[in-house]
Amino acid sequence: MNVDAEKATLCTRKETFSREENAFIFNNSKLFIERSKAIEELNKRPGDPVSGNVILSALTDPFWYIRSEALSYCKELVSTKKELLKEMVIHMAKTDPKSSVRADAVEFLTKHYGDASCLEIFKVAMNDQSYSVIGEGLKGITKVDPKEGMKLAKNLESEKNSRILLSIANLYAENGDDSNNDFFMNIAPQFKGFNNIGYLNTYVSFLKRCQDETVTKSIPVFENVARNGSSKWVKYFGQKGINDLARHYKDKAEKLQMKIKDVKETNPNATGLTKMESDLKAASEMAEKLSVIYNSLIQ
Image (cartoon, rainbow, N blue to C red; front, side, top):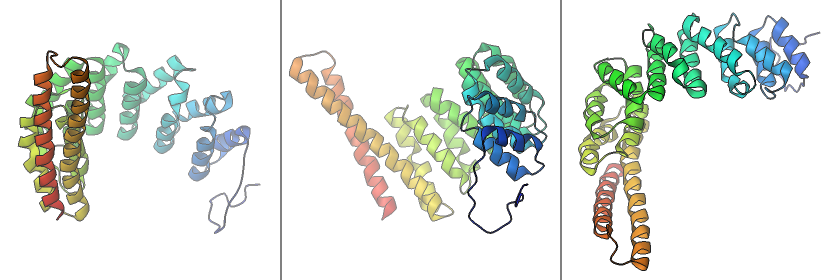
């Protein structure tokens, strides 16, 4: 007997089912809440044959949320059911009627099977009608072939969709250089309100790869959000971006100080010491400049 199957009774529930019972509930219940809870419990032991088989079967479930949930539980199955799982996830990436599930499937392939054998499915994803799927396809191609991914990203820079733009930004944050900074500055107006958060965090990651001149050029973008953001929380992330960059330079200066100290102790006339001291001076100056800006923003 299933007491309160719809979980409508106001009470504290404490119930424990075996994996066989959870498998039965998932396979036979008509209620989403029960089935979702059952597969969540099975995921606690995904290596168990009963649990693993149910999770695999859930990849073809009629309800898209269950398919997506099951896919998130499949990482532990990559080692035990590698080829079968890969085949099923490729099928999802190509044919699932829900775009978010197709995107999840492409992302899963990138993380767990990101090699040349998946390149074709990543290229198929680039022609999807969903921007989220296209974004994941771009990530997949870049993992397999960074040069090709950067080339495709360049061709997509004129897109107006924020998801695509953020996917390109993430790619540049991992693989780009100073020449990509104009892209970040040009897309700043595309991100409004809380959408600024992901953009600014990604921009900071990118700038940590860049020269001081590029970082200096970017400061007005963060200042604008910090002063004119739509809420105090959005403004906070503009401030945080400046502070994160200041800490980046402080850390860089501290590491250089320690390295210079070690070199001077072992070989005061070592080649490159002058360059390290010059880099230390530049890093310290950038840290100070950014700290002054940050303090002016939080007053």
